[in-house]
Image (cartoon, rainbow, N blue to C red; front, side, top):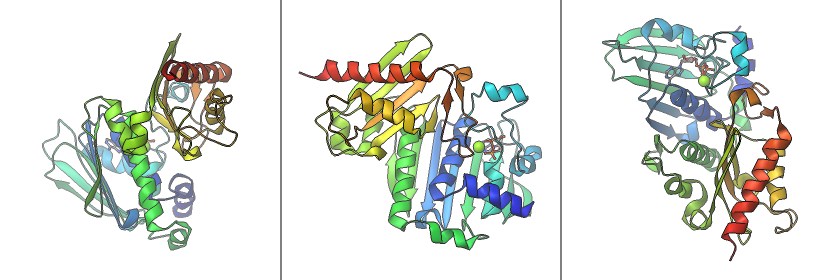
Length: 323
Ligand code: ADP
Ligand code: MG
């Protein structure tokens, strides 16, 4: 089982940013309105995510840490109606198998909370603890049990900036939630959580580009597209400046990106990319998110319809903004 956890961990936890992603998604699923993230040494020494969400009761803490344990799906049919970001019950167990993890939590109804420490997948401490409501997950010495994996990481600067852009993306997707990211003692992102996406845009694209970006808005039947795109005059964007969220989930789907790029095709030189942060909302039944362990890819039931909405939404925004 030890080996099985570490293999699963390889799929879910590729790098420090993937740990941050899973922990932030858990905080969002818990209904947090404020999420505080602390990272030291590019996540290799410490990744700590605190939220003010619903918390985990003391009885459920060990279960939460177990593999394939999720509180988010009750029946198999639920897999086709996923409304939470997590559903595989794999993240905490996987991360705990390759680090030292401290889980601290208190629900709204409990008087005191509890602290559970797991080292390399083995429980080393479990005790009641006086805590505020919500959850803190502290991940220390990531890949301690699989040091070979450390060799596959990029430079600290790269891993750090991956974390920065990941958190910036989620902050943009969840403008009602306050995000704070502190790396090595320095604040690298702080959002007000006031619902205003435009204010958060600079966190991902920088002040200059953010100011130039055009708002996208298209509502069609059960499909809702919102977000921002760069005007055609912006030529320094790369593939990585394209961000899609589908029903609150960050997806990296090449087909979706090419649909977007095609909307620019008569206006953009071949090989050029726009900068874009687009948010699609549709019925959960219309999307299959259970395609990839890291949940990064999705399948749409009506792919052509989704692509066409993206393209029309983008073209319309570009046309409306051109002088
Ligand atoms: P999943 O998110 O797929 O259910 P995880 O391994 O990420 O699996 O988490 C396991 C369980 O632990 C969740 O289903 C949830 O019940 C609980 N949990 C994890 N993080 C939090 C959190 N920040 N707040 C409340 N509950 C949490
Ligand atoms: Mg999860």
